[in-house]
Image 1 (cartoon, rainbow, N blue to C red):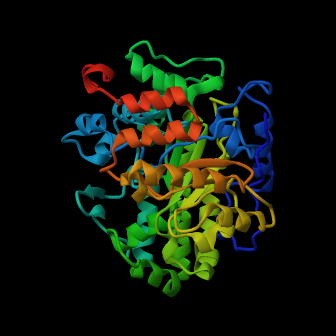
Image 2 (spheres, helix red, strand yellow):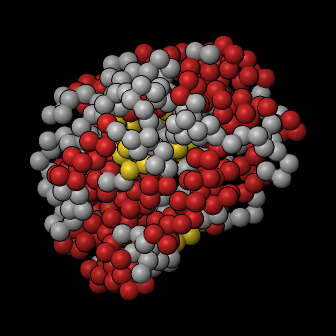
Length: 450
C-alpha cells in the first residue's frame, strides 16, 4: 500500500473569510485515514488508486472524461427523449450509464454520470440544459442582493442549510454511486455481474485486474465555473459579467464563491461517502483568468471545495478519496492548482513533461499527473493516434505517476472502438487489443431492455 502525497502546497493565497469547514487538524485526520481501512495493507490496489497515491503501478491506468455519454450508442438509446438533468437524478439510469464504458472499454475507473449543474439544481437553483446551448439559468445572480437571496433561499428551504447540500436531496446521487459500486466490486467483494453477457463481463474483469474491483470516480464543478454560469446565466466566451462582479463587488463575490465551494464540495463528499474511491474537481473556465486573479480570487474557494470533499471517508476503501484538480487552458495555473489536490489534470495545451516539472517545483514537490491526449486525435488514423498515445505515456513518465486521459472530454462523434483500442495500447494488453479489434455487437453484448 502506498501513501498519498500531501495536499497542502504552501501557497500563500488568502482563505475565504468564515469559510473554513476543515481546519488543519481535520485535514491531518483525513490524511491519516489513508493508512487504515477496508483495503488491507498487503492487498493490491487498483492501478488508478495506486497512481493517485504517487506510485507508478505495473499497469498504467486510463479513463476518459465524458466516457459515460454521447459517444456510446447504448447511451444514446437509453437516454433517448429524456432531459439530461432528469437522467442524472434517476439512480438506476445514472448507474447504468456510469457502468457502460467500463463494460465496453475496460477503463480503470467509472466516473459517475452526472453534470456540474446538478448540485445547483439540488440547491433549488432553476437551471436546465438547452440542446445546442448548454446550461441556462432561470434567474442569474447579478449583484449582492441576488446573492444574499440565493443563500437565504437554500437555508429557508432546507435544501442547503449552512451552505451545504442536505443529505435528503443527495439521495439520488448516493443511490447511483451505490448501484455502480455493487457491479464494480470492492476490496474482497467481487461485483455482481451474473446478469451481464460475456463481452460486458470481460470488460469488467479486464478493468478490475489483479485488485478484483474498479473504483468509482466522483466529481464536481469548480466554484469559479459554477459562479460564472450563475452570473452569466448561460455559457459565455469571456465571462465578462463574472469577472466584473469579481472586481467590482469583492464582498459579494466572496459570498457567492464560498456558497459555490460549499455546495460542490458537499456534492463531491456525498459521492465519496456513498462509495466513490476517488474524485475530480473540474474547472471548465479557469483558463480565462490571469494567474493573479486566479490565485487571489478563485484558488482559495477551489481549495475549500477540495477540503470539504477530503473530509469524507469512502466505505469502499475506508479512507479519504484521492482528489484530482483539472482545468482547461490552465497551463499557467498548474502550480496553484496543486493546492489541496493529490493529482493535477493537464489539458493538451502543455506537454506532460513540462507540467510535471512545474508541479515538481512547487513547495510540496512532485505529484501524479493526469492527461493529456488531444481529443481531436480520436478521429485521426491509427498511424497518427498510436504514436501520440506513446508520446503521452513517455512524457507522463516524468511525474511520480501518470493516469492517462484526454485533454478534455470525449467528443460525441468518437468511434467507441477507438477508445477501447487506446485502453489496450495503454495497458499493453494483446488480448484486450484483440477484443478491441473485434468491436462491440449490440445484439450480442447489450442486455435486453438496457
